[in-house]
Image (tube, rainbow, N blue to C red; front, side):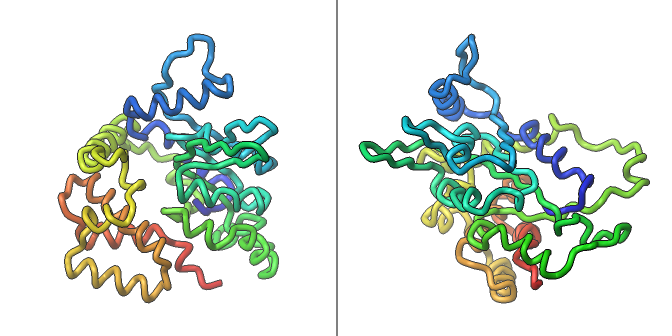
Length: 291
């Protein structure tokens, strides 16, 4: 999420666990084993039925994030397994720390090697990151003057590598909050209502993928994409134009397919339609940056 200070990025991130699907028993058991290994399970030692939410500070080391030590221990990415890893002020993290995220984001696990042993910890999490559009935070804000130079903005964005951004499924811009929106009484959906819709979509995905030991569309590999993310001719032409115009990578193309499939599942649609693909492409805002 990219937006100026005070636009609600952190609050939105902290609310995500309230709408995530309830963990199946296998997921809860996996999470419990990790927390038990590091002594964070608590006194009762019961199975963790709630998805974890981890929010390390930007001063965290690569060992703290990925795991390590003389006797390897799980890091934040493993403690967030089956839950959310939230990185606030993403460019403030050291670049070498961010780069070690690439393996767990791609493989869903992290391997720590030592002279006499190598240990692999599970690390399949939802990465949620928030950042300002520039160092001062007000680039593009109609009510505040941005004080950043073009060079400082480029340095700010260069802290996040293209390969890492390519592995983040959804990029969205969060605008500043207008006064009328701040004071308005809006009767929106509750988290519980949204979660019910998410649970229905997850049930569809479990029925589709559980035979392969998968829980969600995000875990699909190429063979499953070809089987479950088939597009009609109109949708395929639309996506082809987007790939050519935006210069999307093969990874971004596959992620758009997965997001399209999930949008269709949330609507209860059996097939992916053009509006689902169009919405998924809109969630790749950083692929449209030209500065």
